[in-house]
Amino acid sequence: MPGGAKAEWIAYIAAMNIRIALLAPLALIAFAAPALAEKIPLAKISSYLNGLTTAEAEFTQINGDGSITSGRLYIKRPGRVRFEYAPPDKSLVMAGGGQVAIFDAKSNQPPEQYPLARTPLNLILAANVDLGRAKMVTGHSEDGTSTRVQAQDPEHPEYGSIEMVFTANPTELRQWVITDDGGNQTTVILGEMSKGGSYPASLFNITTETSKRLR
Image (tube, rainbow, N blue to C red; front, side, top):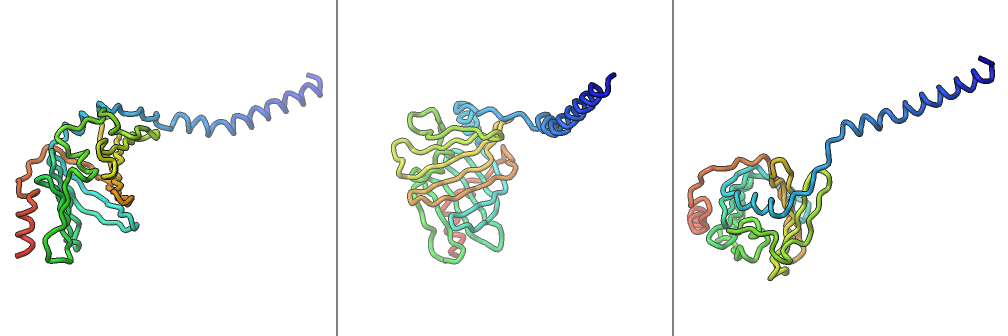
């Protein structure tokens, strides 16, 4: 092989080796990356929530002021939920009998109460969740790993909104962000949920809890 041709061939091989070296990490990333999650249909999410009769999980709560709390929550649909905050915090938030009650651990007064129907949390706890209802869902997207659904009461958007985050296969609720009527946001991140438990009615009874705390 003539000297000039040989030099060109060596240069070509060197260039190819450089290209292979540069592209190899990209190829590894492409093969290693998980397949992007598909957006979970609203009908499937509605069916999942309607089938979520009882559940409990550890939770982490990020408050509007940046503070972080944690605890355990219990859900009994329709209409009942209990947030027990981890010691030494003795605060408690619960919904039952159509009301939401906030028990302040630093007060010996009865809890503050609000109608559940006036809170975005009602969209999860309703007897029949139908995310296909007109103007209920204001956003429905996926970010590659999860599906996000923003929803509000279509008849009362002034009550605030909730953004729910789900993973697929199987569909699972992972967190929600509630924006109240004042624009304040509270994020609740769920641990692994345990479903199908049996909870006594007293666990969600505001009157019973009030009597217990005011003794």
